[in-house]
Image (cartoon, rainbow, N blue to C red; front, side, top):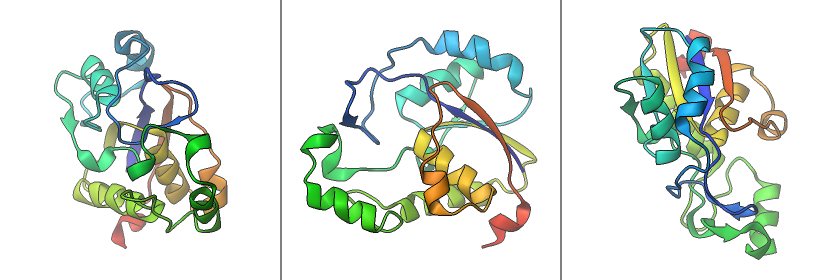
Length: 177
């Protein structure tokens, strides 16, 4: 399965805030990003998007009727949402650093849970040869690490620019688990 992963444009949020699933407006125009991305995308391929407006608006600028799916949303940071990173209790951040795969912020979800819901989405559409996904950095990290069978420390450190397009070839065998 060929995946065309697109990270949303820059959201309107102060630097240093944890914002995960908070639905933020865009700082940048989705139309400008769409003009740049459109020539790089295949025509006639289903487009799915996180329902958060920072993704949805770009998806709507790229395709006439993108399909929205909550499984493509960013990691849920629970009580940490919209908190400055330096105001989050140190013991919580330390616990996350000790167990980045299974740690859940209070009321949030773990990276394992994020990967599970993204994998569930892909299994549903496993028979599609290609998909365009307008999503978030966390989802893109999980997918790129999974597709390339990389260790957690490698893919978790990866960065994707706002408006970035990444093409991944996901082996069908990955969807069998």
